[in-house]
Length: 128
Image 1 (cartoon, rainbow, N blue to C red):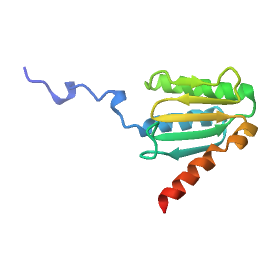
Image 2: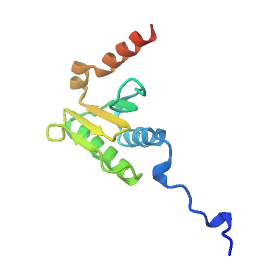
Image 3: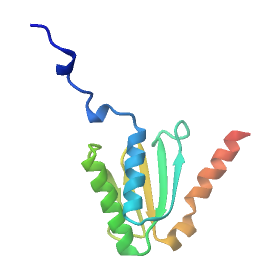
């Protein structure tokens, strides 16, 4: 008996393109009320990841809650369990999803490290 096209397996969710992960992360940050979110495309600029997201939480508790929500969203969408650093203090929490790295800061810590400026300078030098 021949197999009809309807019976062929559908593409698995894990086979979808990587930009979906960045969409999941950004939506999760919006849902968690993260502030001043900046997404930086670092494809080809770094072997670490394709995207870096920098955002802020209002307090230690908010930073931790935002990190938890991002990790939960990644797991729920089939991206596996991300590595998380910085939860004990919640001044600067890093959520490493592989293709997307998320930095969640308290505002004064974000201002001190200013990692967006560092990456912006790097991109400006490459444009010359």
